[in-house]
Amino acid sequence: MIRRCIESGSRQFGMCAPDPEQTFATVGTMLHINDVNFLPDGRSVVHTVGSRRFQVLERGLHDGYNTAKVAWLQDECDESDYTKLNCEVYNMMTQWLEKLPSEQKICIVKAVGRLPDALQGTNENGPSWLWWLLVAMPLNHEAKHIILSMTSITERLNSAKRFLAILLRRSTQQPNFACDRGPWPC
Figure (spheres, rainbow, N blue to C red):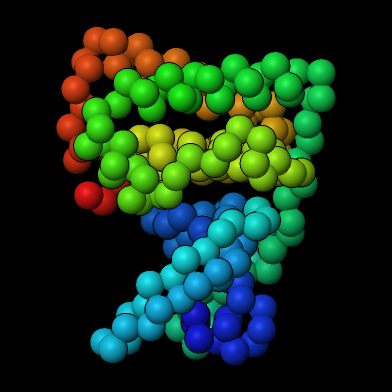
C-alpha cells in the first residue's frame, strides 16, 4: 500500500482507529508520507503528517486493504473564545509535561516527536500542538476518537482542558507515573 501511494504520486493514505464492530472507526485522518524506509524483510518505517480529517461514508476492500468513500470534515471556530482558550490549554499542557518524570517525557518525544511551538502550524484545523497533545495524552482510543470527531475547535480545546485538569490533579496525588502506563513505546 505504501509503495502504491508513493508510485501514484499522491503520497497519502487514510488511517482510522480499529473498531471491533465495523473493522475501523467512522472518522479518520488523511496522512501525507514525508519519508519512508523500506526494510529488507518487507516492512517499512513511515514518517507521516496528518493533513485532513474525514468521515467514512462507505466501506470496501481492495487487494486485501480496507477502503472507504469519505467526506471531509470542516471545523468551526468561535473566534471570541479561541485565543484565550488556546493559551489556557497550552499552558495547562506545558504544566502537565513539566510534572512528568524525565523518562516519561523521553518516551513521549520518541513516540510522537517534540511538542510544536504554540504558534506553529495553526490552520483551519486548529493548532498543531493540540493534535500532538491528543497523541501524547494517555487516553483510550474511544476518547481520542470522540475528540477527533469533533468539528468545533473550541469544543476540542475544552475537551483537552478537561482531560488535562484530571491529569494535573493526578500528578499532584501520584507524582511518579510509570512509563509503561502510557500509550508510548519505550
